[in-house]
Image: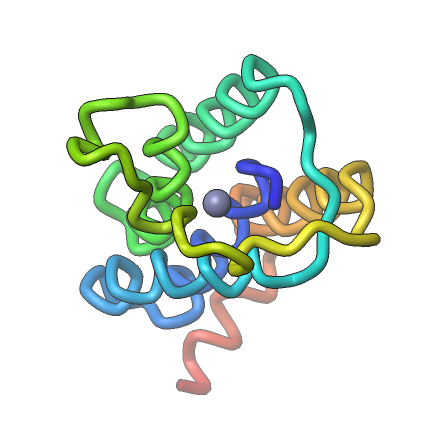
Length: 139
Ligand SMILES: [Zn+2]
């Protein structure tokens, strides 16, 4: 699954739970769940890294570095670091992507994943609407 969507789903989980701990724990699980969905990947490593980083920076800038959404996004996308950092797999095997058959290629189009990531992140970094104060009073 593309990195940007890993970032977005982790961010949504973090924002949804509102808990930093839950965000950090759910992140890697969401990563595995996302990779399990039959999906297309983007071949360009450069695009994957830069788009993922851009999404993380945006979240951190708009919500704060330690916001559950930002932490969830980092935790959910972190497993893909083992593709680019050999030191994370000292014995040559990948922890999250090593098991044969876990990662599924399939029909979930990469551009749709990108669109979805943008929609989720857009909702998470958008300025609070006027109704937000009212709904907070109902909790
Ligand atoms: Zn992955």
